[in-house]
Image (cartoon, rainbow, N blue to C red; front, side):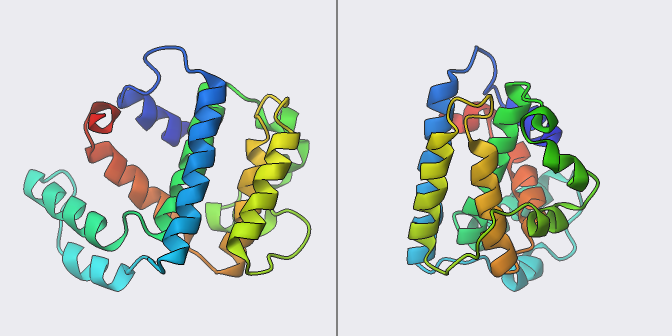
Length: 193
């Protein structure tokens, strides 16, 4: 949460007071990107990414360009990248809105010290992901809306629904989040928009 929010602030996304409703809607729009990338069968190719980034050194300007190219070619806009993007955006919102997740969802205390992948294997909605992605995420958004008056606008529930998908598909979401955050650091203020 802290790292997601820090990078977002550095990139100018919190210069003015954020409209929480607008931010939630933007996150929901990103959920649609998960479905779109899945329908296109666009999945991350970590082998090709590793091949293209082998030998790169952190902080080298030339290597930064190679990293960005490899990320944009093999990872960006894939199913897993869109999942990571939604998780990052939710984390940024929670950090920026100063949501006390333990007050909102006290059961999360049990998982605070777990690595991200393990956290998502535990922080799930009861019920099994049925493999029908659009239906599952529709239910997630419906539940998110029913908790919209909560301080987190129901976004923690959405994140838990994503946890079921992460677990079922055995996605190394920590790797995707870390790599996406590294990529976001290379982008211009407000991502050039």
